[in-house]
Length: 475
Image 1 (cartoon, rainbow, N blue to C red):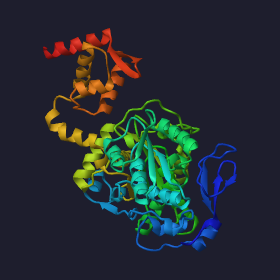
Image 2: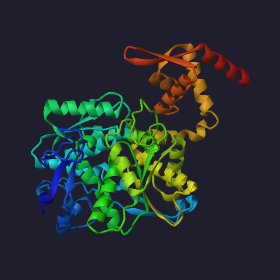
Image 3: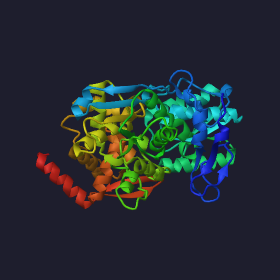
Image 4: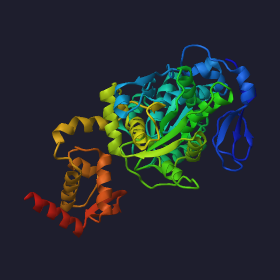
């Protein structure tokens, strides 16, 4: 494999301090800034080569050097760029495309960075790989570690899509509980790394992730499309920054004339980057315990938040939030009109495009690429919700669900999971917590902690509201 190490450095972009290329580290010891692999593009242009079929490793000349005999691959990359016709017509666009990352070996874009990081771990003679993940990355690292014969340890928060957790478990990984949020899981992973010396493959703690994901842009370039807009679901902010960096590298090396406008999409219940974008000066703020069905991007304190804003700002793009209802509607439309079943985070890009077309930000002639990051099969709670819709029509309305919760709590105080079970699991656990939070804000419930659990109790106001509802129904 050709070595580009002489045109590359691992550097803090904040203070300029340089570090050895390997092992990868994410934060500057001097100023705390994020580290990034930086290229001399004038030199890299002369060393640039694309060899082999359209796949992840076709672009190894723009990766940090890894011994080709140590490459761990399951056939990742080379995903199709689908041209939408029926859904595009419904939205009002002539040039809508989907970069379909569900075609990767474990059905998500994270296979790209898993391949590079596990290859690097093998190259550096590690025996164990560690990552914190709320879904896709954990499944990917588990699969590639199995392929390489390395031990795999995944730190998971409480809220993980069951399908992704099942993927991890089939590879017999060591699952470590890391608190309620992905932020707590990442903190735990950093602590475990310091105690064990295992290879750190957490997306926010390894700059190789940016390098692996940026080649999505190289693929789009070679697939012959020059997007006006590229729409990306955003959690920690690393993905949108990755694809922006890829297009920026292509521009720096004279292969394209301009970079697409980057559109950051987040769920309304968890949109710190969008909130920051809409303020001047921009600043990413933390949000506490957000609730949304879009679990893949449930990140309230994004490590790459400022980088995501940089990508949006430098490209002349925008940031927009979408509701869970808009996401689920877009998910159904993508399946019905295009035959693509994706997870909610992926569908959020379609929801965003619809809003931007209505707002006049995107016109019908412009070329729009939506990044579909993961398969809908990884989120079984969505399948359950879809399959129950007919049976529950007329019952599971917003008011109906809240009324049932109040009835349960009228009998005795309870906690979220038990309430969900008493409701027969007819809606998702996430939806139960959303209703509990809304009822609490209206003063119908109070909460308290006992034995490590959060219990809910109906208030006098809640009892009166329930009695009024029952009176209206003649119960």
